[in-house]
Length: 500
Image (cartoon, rainbow, N blue to C red; front, side, top):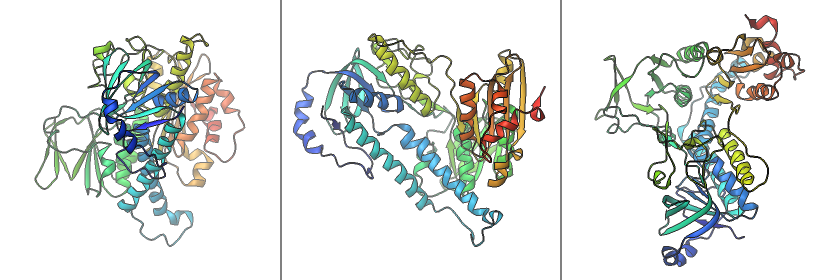
């Protein structure tokens, strides 16, 4: 099967293969406009992690597959989320390390600073290289990759307004919706007129403000606060709730808050936004419900994300949405419409790329099972870790202490300062603590919160132990390489750090 690619990408694709499509598109434009419905085995609407992986997999297996994507080749993660933000965060960490050069026995580091032009170049190079690789993988798989806007016009049938002009109508024996999310802009007075920044637009800034308000103390807000403060922006976080990172235990949130305050970040908790205004000179004023105001050169609104389900006429073909616009699915990722499945953020899956990738595995298994090959798979009970890439990092998996107690578990708590881990001393990062929640009745690990350097790597060790159903003593007694951060787990579960 010869791969097809339709649509001209909106960005330069560094390193991408040269694909001659314009002449073919022009020659077939009139033909496309008058085409009958094109039938395929699998129609994927939205090219996020789950959808694109499934599309490539089935296309390589010889199925007829079409994937429609609005504009972001490779999905949100590669273009405006995980990859560019973690690239920037890593640059910030390098800068922090250079500033501490003398502590590591290095002289002559001078007064390093972030060069925004070079920083953007690095971020764009990483993104564009990955986008180019994605495009090459799409076309190489044999799928029909289409850039355009899809709208349902009949069951399992979409009309696609192509980015390069014209219209196509496609129908899938099976349809997968992988529509993703975008930054939520809440109904705050004056917000629409104030040219606020979002996590998307902030990545494209050509100059840095001297000061910024970050509205929202969740994962996105905290990561950007840490990064912007590192590169010299005066940051004020305004959080409506009583702590940062509302899902976390109070001691974890308090430690991150203190880290921020120690670094010079202003944190306003229990402060709800009432009105936003931007003056003629560009400065932004945020009025709080208390009557107080906060003023800065710019504002980042990071209060959550909303599903991109509007405009696709999903409900018109029987796909039900919840009251927030997310697609209703069962535990096998089937929607309320026959033959239509959904995956990723817009289907209510936890908003992490690795969770969307597991949706792909669920979908692949269930599509095969429907045809008599094996047993179906469920999303119920999945153990999904996540990390907050502040400095130090927070790695989390399973239940927090609060969640475990609310669920009725009788628990042990193990809690240890990162200073107890030899590796932390060798790398010079002693901030944070590790905490584990243990079921007293079974000795199983219910969850952990690792706040400290390299927590995003060490968390996988605990996840594997939890998946295997091991007693915490098995982790305590394991022989783990010295000196590594994961070795700290053999200390965390010793009697010295177990609390009643």
